[in-house]
Image 1 (spheres, protein in one colour):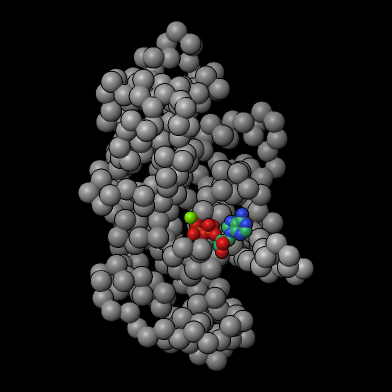
Image 2: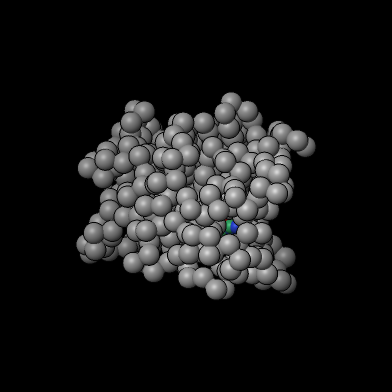
Length: 308
Ligand SMILES: Nc1ncnc2c1ncn2[C@@H]1O[C@H](COP(=O)(O)OP(=O)(O)O)[C@@H](O)[C@H]1O
Ligand SMILES: [Mg+2]
């Protein structure tokens, strides 16, 4: 379905408006992974690890500096015109905050019918029927058709954002922190809805969250990101029963509410991106950058686990 190879994206950021020099942030540093047909890949990592940049590159909302993204065998970074537009139909996104991602001046019927009309997927006369069907599929009844975003709860708004994403009948859905702005009591409902629509519409999904518990609930495979790098990749159960990277172990401990090991902060500029926080760091981590290494089922970027 999707094959991402050596994707890199660097941002140059000025420290202030008056600063002459700028610092380079490697938002994505040679990220590679595969997504199989019908699979849900979880992407987990703390804030700033590059998850949203990855999502924006896959959606072609942003151009990576290097690397390739193949979707159904096609190099999407080379698409132009009509083919570019048809990718917009095939790959859809749900963002974190349904309030800012929905136009406040538009009613639900207009929000959901916009992509349908844009891609000529339905005749105008039949649009109401179509929207009704989509609303039902996200657990809302027709009474929502003429509501504005501000008249709905956060959970209902996120259902509308999911409905809009489904409207073009995509084959890949990217969900970027889709429950992070919602009350905990609502999160499970939206996660269950995502799983349900994924199954019903035979979607593949990239599910992004900083919260490992949330990622565990929906994903079949997981990649763990830190400062633009994939540090570990594997099947969900494998990651949880046999976490190899110190960062993954830390995330798992954190998700269980266990106490954190003491942070070490010295060592800026080391090759391994996790060096500054790693309790197990060795000399080699300063000079060499570990690359992802292992089997198809489980890979890790750490010298202590046989990495190279
Ligand atoms: N448009 C941008 N301009 C400059 N820096 C950016 C931009 N977008 C993201 N970054 C930086 O890139 C890094 C990764 O950001 P992001 O992809 O948003 O991470 P995440 O979604 O995991 O929190 C962060 O250090 C962030 O500050
Ligand atoms: Mg983000």
